[in-house]
Length: 319
Image 1: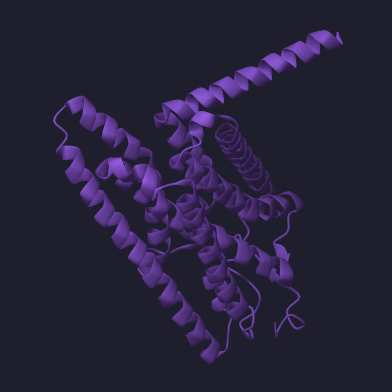
Image 2 (image 1 turned 180 degrees about the horizontal axis):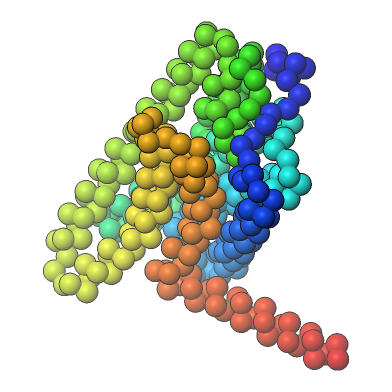
């Protein structure tokens, strides 16, 4: 990376100027990150330990929890450290690493959500072929493709962005290292155009996934409306509701953050939106999925009861 020697560090956007607010942000981020770690950890453990959840949806939910954990662990720890230490700096290589992993986990999550949409489509529209189309080998291949595509996108964007010469200072208008904010510091016209080309390719790929999601849900709604009983329609639709909510939260926040009109842009709004799409979803996704999935709730309840009972036994046996 050509400018690593000339640029030792970046300055991140401070969450607050007053010390009291900085500490408040630290405790708020700590609470959100602990909630995300606990909730996603419970889902990972429940899916891994309960054979009733060894289904395609359980497998994809496990992968989704891994991306959520990756997102929260990429952005939040450094923000907490800076708030606690009253600083805004991040090293050049630390910024490159953070940018790479953020793009990697965000991209992988979007592709996994697209695959989970296909899972719902097959389950409702082609239930007799579910075992054939979504066998263990097919699920593993689709998940691997999602992770590999996310890795490739992150690698290309990060390598190109951090190979550009930067001549507009080192202050980023974001609380974590995000590629669009780093590009604003570049003074290389050809490198900037190369990154724009990569962004166009990524957007086209993302748009293809979006079209596939829309097409799948049109077919799902048509199939659900053909179910004769109201109870059957409600049951079929309830299996799609968590995925719809998670997908809508993900797409709406990211789309508004990047495509909002410049006239309504402000540092405080940009900061709130960045927290909304990078920090909040990893904590909310496990809650959204567990509320409607009875098997997942039962497995988590059974696991927590077993852990609590084991702790009580150890406590009394030690006494």
